[in-house]
Length: 154
Image 1: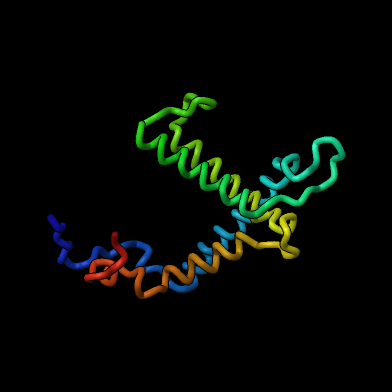
Image 2 (image 1 turned 60 degrees about the vertical axis):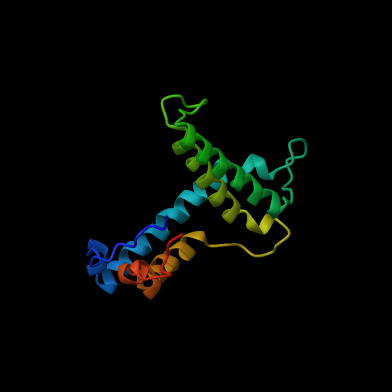
């Protein structure tokens, strides 16, 4: 049986009334904080980018790093599905810890992308900032478009 689409008027959200300056300011802050957190993650995870015997930086396989990220998301899904608490941080929900692991992996990979076979560095905070602004103004992300037939639904 097919589900009926909601044909009511779209809900007005606080974010819909942001001025362009407010939107850019919020996105800038998000990007700045993400870059700072990424720097901290890079420092704390440096050992994964150095050979354990020699201490030299190693090239890591980007596909492997992406697969490790997939595994964190799969673990988050499983923890949510089974409503599990985390086994290493038992006071936290499993889904929360696995999503935290994914964030750490994404930021670490972004900061160390130049240590894969690529030569360029990534600026994940600025990319997030620009993407937040872009997504906020996309017509297909607006409530009316999302409610339309063929809108952002699955």
